[in-house]
Image 1 (tube, rainbow, N blue to C red):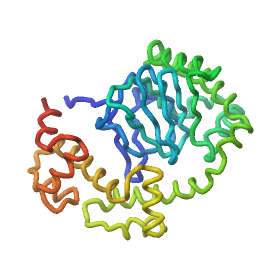
Image 2 (cartoon, rainbow, N blue to C red):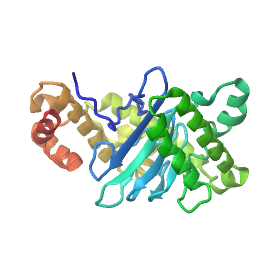
Image 3 (spheres, helix red, strand yellow):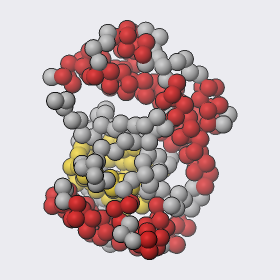
Length: 299
């Protein structure tokens, strides 16, 4: 049986994440995880319909959400709204520990009234892509403990997960006041850029095997090359071509594990001009050669 690799981000063609729910019949993924520089789930821009809640147990880390860097320390919790482009990143050379809960909002929709009055006003508000509960905030210890308890006590129990999710949502609703919304307004321009970025991410997925230029990527998003660079640098902290290279390397990593193809064959399948260039680029992304990566995954 193939080894299940938790924490690895698998994306659809449009750049959205395929969330690997703990139970396919119940849309939740709850995991006691870690983050360290260079791990496979660091700095991978993605989005999903689910909301994402992360509470830091130890160390320091950060989340980039719609171009805003949110630094997190022990006791902090971040709520990432549905559809927001985000990724985690390590800010030190040490390992940080956290609990992550990825939950589909439909878990909360016990009735039409609840959906309309309590759920949609938050998940449909694209001008507020996240909420940061700092450890020193009055409500942060409560939501932090709820997230930890959800992982320790409720994981695998759909009823208890739902119970904890409602309690967490109640705290999130209290944070999403009109005053808070006004505090983080001005995201309309970023939302437009969000759509352009998603279009360009989809283009890269569809054409990564081919030779792609900056002009091609910009055209896919309906923006100039200059604005294309700005969007990628702001929302992913990478240039368009760096994002493309990392995307290809992730495809290389998948083929190294799942296929018996030779290095030249993998290079040809992933858009690289040759096996040596592929190996050089892969080592920059993963910190090891393709051959060493393959040995490590099968070891």
